Length: 413
Figure (cartoon, rainbow, N blue to C red):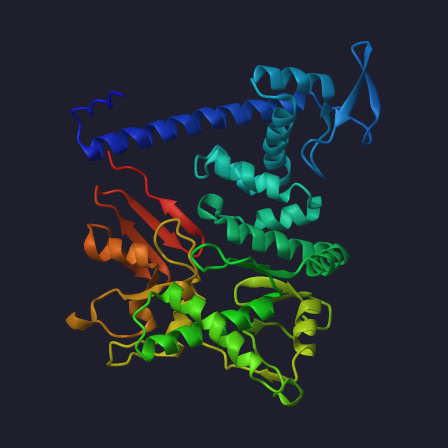
């Protein structure tokens, strides 16, 4: 098989050409979406769900393809539209429903698409995820997507979870209870290399405690001289924790001790505002009660001021600094990377050897892959303000990464 011939243009020119193709494709989709919305206005069927309507001498049905609050559209007209779009009947109906869901239920998302700030495929995913929500809950999600261009899927899931808790608490509690019945831990049979896969679904508090225990034991193994990679030490730590438990006298074991970073207001447990926070995730007041009720000892940590600057002179990073950085940034700060900050290295923005302080203001979470890219390649970043970073690629493309996600800067002409 003959390899394609490389063009005469340099890599930077080729990447710029590809970016222009992406922008052209998205511009075409934007025009398509605007036309679909205009088509819907011409093919609205008035009436309640499932009602048949006489249109031009035949009985037609209004289909609720886009969710609560969006118009019903003519069934037969939709068939024609889907055929013109060259899509399958089911796939085409879903696609049109997502477009109309954006237009009627997510006006901020729709405006971002029409202005070219948000890729249509991202907006389509947002419409799909919010489709089951009531009109009120979808409007809440949309209001919180005021700058939707860089939103990540984890942030969208948190907004949807919070919207359900706020506007449909009975459904939220029913889903939580039903989901709890699906918790499990599976340990497969050993393979030919003597290794076994472990998978499971745990209560969030139990998973948090397990992760903390595994991390502590893995760190201890490293301190005691193990040269194995961190992931290997974490796997070894699970076995050590299990063996330690087998040696316990369970009848005389100490009471369970729970440490949770739970953020609640004075109205959360009273029911006026049923939404709390566990780290950065929305949780219901009922979940807080369940966690607190399962522990005989609850540890309350002092509030960490994320704007506080207390540098230390050593290169080693104190635990309070790491926690502060993790609560501020949550994930690796490389463009579009979603690896948890707790599993990342902390990079000194200004190198410690060149006078950079060991302080949250000078620390950025980078996963090992992107830490290596920053250290050993021409990838660079600048801190424009706390929690906001401007990255520059080897060929001069730039992105802004902040709490709203990743935003590509426009090409310079």
